[in-house]
Length: 355
Image (tube, rainbow, N blue to C red; front, side, top):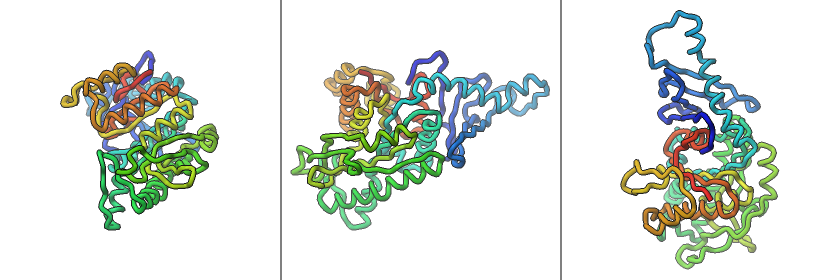
């Protein structure tokens, strides 16, 4: 979300697997037929192509030169870029930390959407940092090894054998798969975990008697991370860290994203989730709270309007804001190109929490 004179609206109705960037507020434009494409080749440049169908007389061929020029793909492309300019100017050079998880990791179309959004944001001068978990992939490999996944109050019970699998899957597979996809799409990604360069230091969770090797972040050292961000690379960080003795811990990816956002002085923290955002009424999907401050969200928690798995996400956002992050957003990762919609439009797509 950002302030500007002309909002750029995005649509998620495109079924394309490649990057699509939709702007339905152009005159006589059918948003389902407008596609803004970012190629997966040519790492140094961005080439955009637009397909559109006018709402008026879609099957009629215009003969007037002035009319055909105004409806040409080049004209649509120029309009879209013109609308994007205020948002690009606002966020250019700013660090955006994105926590990636949920359905966006499981559905190929959504994964492609997140990757292309990150690459596009990087190409126009933003500095994205991606933090990921990988619960479904961990469950898959545990089951292949005949290990039953266990949870306590919604948190994975992580014994020594499970911790070994968590490290193998998050650091060795999920992380490198994401790095490969981002590199293929034209950016330069670097895969890390919290253990690399002592990026994160961990300690046991207070409930370790029940949870095992589940940890909390005690310290962030961005020495290894800052040069990557400054040089236009996209860090991809697995939510695994170690304590002073070298013992590995499984850490909630939301928590890691929030702590990294604070350490990097990020402009924005974005959590991709499987819900639309914070709802005024949990039973009404249309009751989305578009913007709220820290006092307001704490009041919603006290009134039990925010409950369950949303509480740790909100607390993560509040903690990051208290440490200097400008805004934190909880958005629907089930919607294609939700990252672009949140950053490059006036209304955004989820709930933005402010300090």
